[in-house]
Image (cartoon, rainbow, N blue to C red; front, side, top):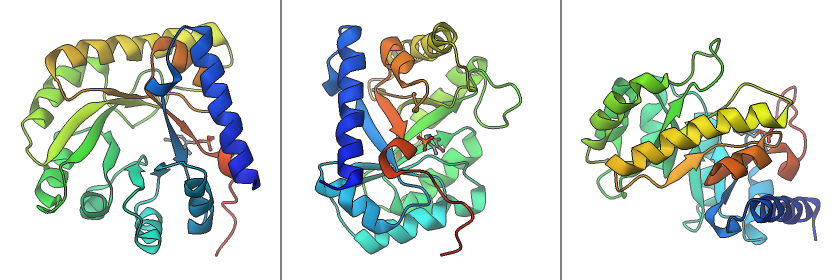
Length: 232
Ligand SMILES: *Cc1c(COP(=O)(O)O)cnc(C)c1O
C-alpha cells in the first residue's frame, strides 16, 4: 500500500467513526480528495484505491490533470474562487462547481456548458462565519440566488458549500456547521435536486459530520503537505 492509499484508508475510518458517534450512515458522506498542487500521478494512485471524487482550486491546473488522466470514472469538482474569464474552462471540463456566489457567474456557466455533457452540478457558496472573506453570499441572499440558478437549464442546483473561519473549539465549530445544515434542510424543501452539503475540512470534519454534512473536502491528510514554492 502506498502512503496515499494508507492515508485514504485512515480518513475513511475517521469518517466512519465520526458518523458512528452520531448515528449516521457513513455512506451518506462523500469524501472529496482535494488534489490541488499535486501531480496527476497522485490522483491516479488515489483512484487505484477507489477514490473517485477530486477537488481542484486552480482552473488551469485542474484542466491539465483532467485532460492528462482522461478517466471518465473520475468526478472533478472545482472548489476555488472563480473569475468570469475562467468560467468556460470550468463549464467545459468539470462535473461540479462549489463556488457559485453570483448570478453573473452562474449565467456564464449555464451558457458555456457544452450540450453533449450533462448539466453542471453547482453549489452556492455561503459566507457563514467569516465577515472578512469576500467569497460566498450571506444566508439572507440565498433564496433569491437559488431561485435564479434553478431556472438555468444547463445547471443543476445540488446544494450549498462553505469554508467556515478556523475555530479550534468543537462546540463553536458545531454551531456554525448547524447553521449551514439548517439552511441546507430549508433549501431541500424547495428544490428536489438539492442533496449536497459541502462542509468540513481536516480540522472541523467531525463537527460537520455531526451537523449533517454530505461531503467533506480533505487534501493534506491524503496527499501530504503542499509546496507552493515549487515551480514544476
Ligand atoms: C485546499 C482546500 C481544502 C483541503 O484543505 P486541506 O487543508 O489540504 O485538507 C478543502 N476545501 C477547499 C475549498 C480548499 O481550498
